[in-house]
Image (cartoon, rainbow, N blue to C red; front, side):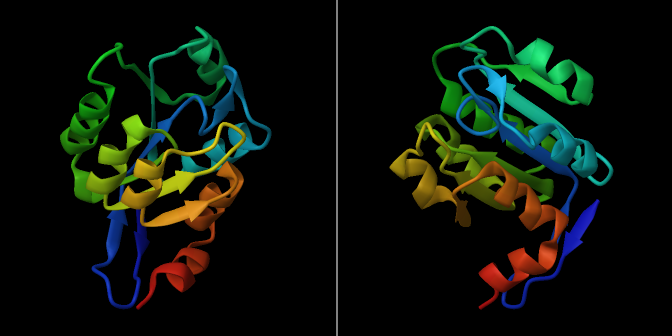
Length: 156
């Protein structure tokens, strides 16, 4: 569990990290540099789940060495499926990271939603739904690994 006290907000008691795959932690089906070691470190304090339609058919092979839970989301209704996944875990225990329009609802429902703008860009809906926006997935991971950064960003 990762507990973060942020002045002006309810404390975060995070147990689950839910990640979008393509555009967030991967580009063209391949994990981005720095993702694997950060995920391994985060697995020490959070259960890590990756949601994907697996457009490139590579998610299983890319993620197998990391020991994360992989959930394949079928085409059609992806936004609702991702949001329902967060709800099933217990939205108040989830930090969600994504970049696409189909990630907006999960970002909004999670206790902490982080939108990431990588090379694929980010949908406006994801940016509006997020609590924090970063320009690199490693920055998103650092907010969790070094929570004083998150505290500085979100305190009121």
